[in-house]
Image 1 (tube, rainbow, N blue to C red):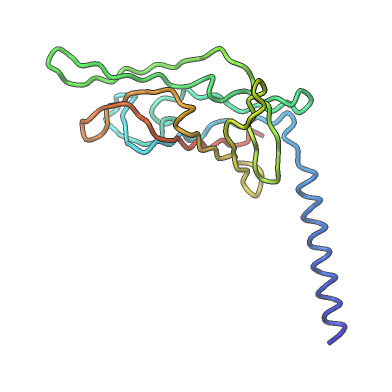
Image 2 (cartoon, rainbow, N blue to C red; image 1 turned 30 degrees about the vertical axis):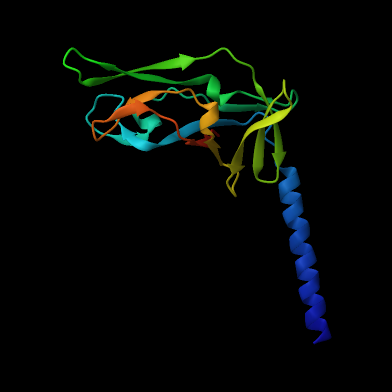
Length: 177
């Protein structure tokens, strides 16, 4: 029985050591994650194909990637490149969707890797703007942008209603290898 306890304790120690090494060896340096999905809570048709989706990448891909530079401790700001959408009413009062891609002038963000959490930091105010979660295999970063950081875009929804989108957005980025 004593041997069994000793072997169990040894296994736990070895598993913990290898787990720590895996975490410490991972670096974001030079990695590029491309946006794969940009999910909102409503279905829209931005490309006029008659098919509504809640994934804005499918409808009109205007979104930037995440390129990490560990030496400078900076990452491209994914919110600098985005969609610009607004609704206008035609002569008969029907809502029409206008969409374009916008590239904003902006600064890169700082970042910090804390386990599986990537903290995106506003370097001017030294505060975390938002966070992302790395998948177990480190090939996916999921970011839920708070509504306060997003531009106020207006959409025509599947049910024919329209209005300003004022909710969070979930973006999924995949590692480009």
